[in-house]
Image 1 (cartoon, one colour):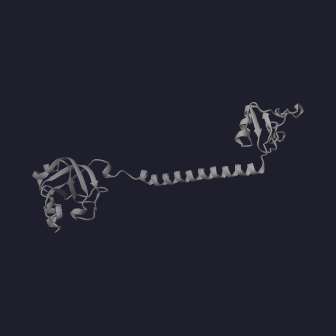
Image 2 (cartoon, rainbow, N blue to C red; image 1 turned 90 degrees about the vertical axis):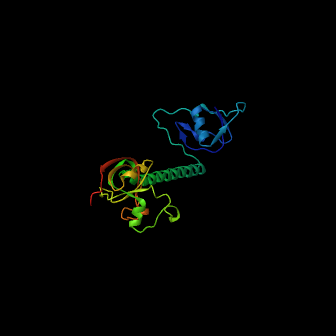
Image 3 (cartoon, rainbow, N blue to C red; image 1 turned 120 degrees about the vertical axis):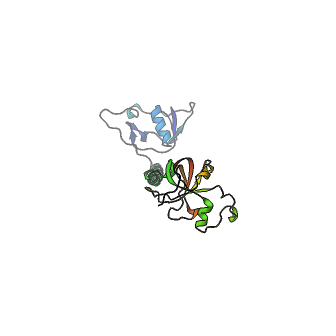
Length: 229
């Protein structure tokens, strides 16, 4: 493969004396050497019609002397400096990427370590069915509904008198779901509600607006009355 040397070289590689390759001369060299010179930007491809320099056989440029180890090529100072800058930039980019990965993993691990919440699974809660409007009235919270007119709360329900269980501290839940209307005939009775938590609410507060919400998918009658606490 024909290449034209564009920079002065020194040293040797694989027994090849690079210092014998003169700048601005064209040489017909093997493919591996040509690829090396081109990758290091110390040579450029030359046309097949350009004359090549003839090398004395005694220089043994392209033969490795028996018993000799390959010497590390000695590049020009400007080329070596440019190569060092590229290596530093590449290493800096790797460090930045590694730092980003570590940061993302650090943020994700606490989430992975957290136990699943009730919002991720179906739960069962036992309590007494009460009209939302009656629940509000007992706590002087107004009529609720649109603009405090009470509109829409006539068929809304609250599950009350719930015993705290495990991580659940709330003693009352607002009930939602398509089957909610079935509870109209269960006012004042104890039932078991099956569903998923839509909103954790504020368990320490009994205000209707702070109650956690459970989306009911099914319910089971327990008693036809609400037992005393």
